[in-house]
Length: 326
Image 1 (cartoon, rainbow, N blue to C red):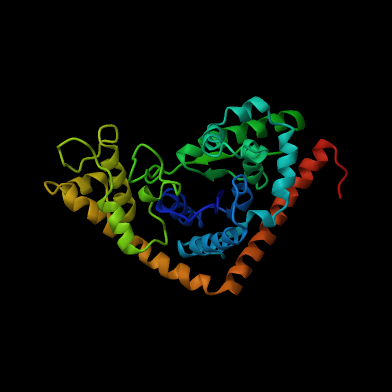
Image 2 (cartoon, one colour):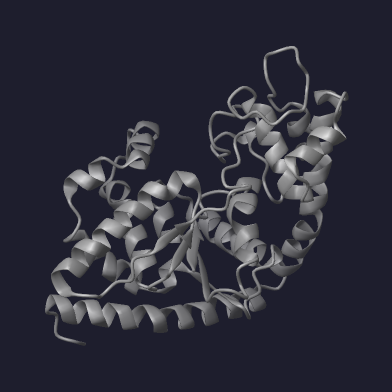
């Protein structure tokens, strides 16, 4: 199993509940590879010192969230050069039309009209290389990333159709509860660091988290009832999903708990549950960030193991396309 998150901003509870929390639960079932996708971040201009800080903070947060480096391979994407090497080969087996139809390219092009670069267009090919080079069975992703997995599978099938059984065709692994956490400010869009008021960050102060939940959008009707109805009440459904993920309670239990109490009681309760969920993670992250030598030992060992696996796939691909082995 393999996945990665861009360190283009601070991790938020959407990353945690939709991905990282579920990753930690898979360590005994799968051989897991998780990375800081720093190469993907530079499709948008980054401050170099800030990017380095965020990579280390993300690594520390991964570990604090339960990704034990003894059970999971944790590494930095740019430390394994074969990702980029495989991406170039896969570029030559990816059609221009496929890339031009990618939703994320259209969205990011609209947001960064002054910097529509080739890397932004080519992003899905590097993502396909990230995946295929480790021959994973499953790739845990959010629902919004399904399109990237589909193009990855298309590229792999096309390559296999020419050269034989080279790549394992990965399956998306999408968690049902917590699969897609929405913005607290605009519940019809995914929680994102680009909308800070609707986004709850992993290392945010408790008082700021509580404030955001108290201001969370619920619905415009006068029902004031905590009821799980995603189509009618997307804001309430989102809060219920977050509360369910933080407490382990079912939607039915949540409806009973807040029966007759309304949003005035429900929203602060969700905030308190998230604060308590994050409290030990925040403390452990800060402890780990103070131990730079340990973090370095983790990402060095992770890159060494990842490179060993990745290079086996790269050598196979190079041989198939006709390159002389180095």
